[in-house]
Image (spheres, chains in turn purple, yellow):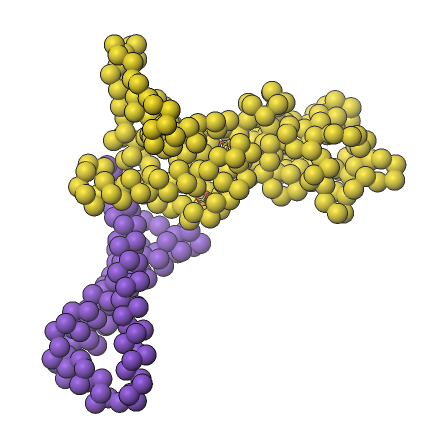
Length: 115
Length: 247
Ligand code: SF4
Ligand code: SF4
Ligand code: FES
């Protein structure tokens, strides 16, 4: 397959797969929020749950990665269709933006884990 | 809809890419199609009007135009069904294609997309075009046969292509008709070019740009479902890639 079309298809596949992961992650996230606020939300309570817990760290890292990529690929498509921003340069920029967004999320999760 | 004197107010695009709407008064008749109206204008009022038709019975796909802003096959569209409450009828050339003159568009980019999507049957056993040794048995009830059947009656009218926003946003996008054609061939067990075809329909100019908004399906005069065909292409490419089947 021509490399460009293949790359575009891979972006599409990445967006669908991240969507599936996000559907699950958002559900877990919402349920956790609802359960957590019932006991009154405090910094101590949040830290108590997340500090040192590798499972939560992994969960939020995957969540942030999927959210960053999913959002950036979506914005890429909108920008391509409405502003005509197409091509390799733009694609790399969007990938960078997606990974950077994910990076912020992962850093926050790490902060809570290592706090 | 029919004015007191029994005449219709019809405005028609005159010119190429640049041009203007021109008004005509056409006698209203029972059971008149939009194509009848255009033909009346060309024969009785203005012989310089350019438009295209052939079969007049919904088979050839050459008479499509924008009728009050919506792409339709004009030979099978009764005027009474489409004339608005204001009694007016506006006709423009089919959208998303270059205008040659008046109501005639250049269909070449549309059919070039069929070629790009590998819309040509490629016999499996006889790549050189010779008659194959064995005939394939294709059970009518098989899943693939039914998928192919669902899209095979396309008349190439371009109504779906004119109704698709993604074509308007990205002129390279292969569009619903070419992708629908590709999907019928992907499901043709006698065809030997699946690999090349799947490659040709992948990416931003192919099935992956479709938003599944179904304007094509809604507007297709043959009641085909190009949107579902495109979903089929996406699904096949998705699993081909994830399972490492060459695609
Ligand atoms: S479903 Fe896809 S091909 Fe059909 S009109 Fe919408 S975007 Fe175009
Ligand atoms: S799919 Fe339907 S609307 Fe599109 S070209 Fe074929 S017959 Fe016309
Ligand atoms: S003239 Fe042939 S389909 Fe309308």
